[in-house]
Amino acid sequence: MSAAKRSKYLTVFAVLAVFTVVEVAVAFTAIAKSTQVVLLVALALIKASLVALYYMHLRSEGPVLKVIATFPLLLVIVLLLLPVFDLALAQ
Amino acid sequence: MEHAVERRSGPLAGVSTTKFAMWLFLASEAMFFAGLIAAYLVLRLAGSQWPVVADVLNVPLVAGNTFILIVSSVTMVLAFASIESGDQRRLRQYLIATAVLGSVFLSIQAVEWRELLAEGTTVSTSLFGSTFFTLTGFHGLHVLGGVLFMLYVVARAYQGRYTKEEHGGVELMGLYWHFVDVVWIFLFTIVYLV
Image (cartoon, rainbow over all chains, first blue to last red; front, side, top):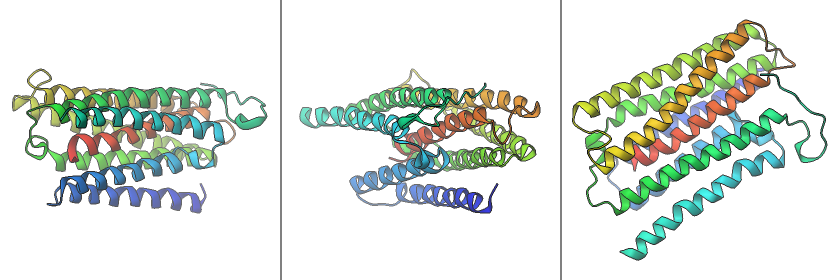
């Protein structure tokens, strides 16, 4: 395999590893719960995107596979937001 | 698992039928886990009694396990890159490393479950127990399925079935394995850190 490819995959790995350490640090730091949740979700989204784009090679795929991969994400957002609004209204 | 690349034009040009099917399968799997996670959030946010997660769960142990799964994603992508350049020996080595790392992940999860069960947290003792074992259990089953799938791919690699030109089975294996990693990235955040 080419050195450039290997280097790219290992760089992504380094970012994933560092972000995992940061996640644990954020979880155990005494900050506002809402800030903590936003930071943790953002870190998870970045990590998942890196895996999908570089390890699953979505970055170099055509538009159809990109849509297939992204569409469930939109449905997931709806699925997760609806109960949150519902709970907020109920309280 | 032959990888029939059909001569198509348009947006699906160069995409094999099996790869297209795998992405559709993964999209349906994403919705499956989304349903479970949504149920978890509803029960947790609306539930009256929820333990302090760090008091109940062994977060450092699972953080280490998360690291192992990330390493396994690297070995998997290196296996794919190896066969892309025709290196069958490295393909086998990286595939075996990935299967071993997946097995280590499952073993550590088994240790975690044993600790929880010994402390009296089971699938039926509380909403926390029910949702925890359901989410991590279904993910663990997916890892187990991935390890078995990997052993099949390893066997075929030893038969010399994958070449620089024809290695669709390794690509499908990789897509599935990385998807399982992506699911864990979210589960680790939602179940252990938030």
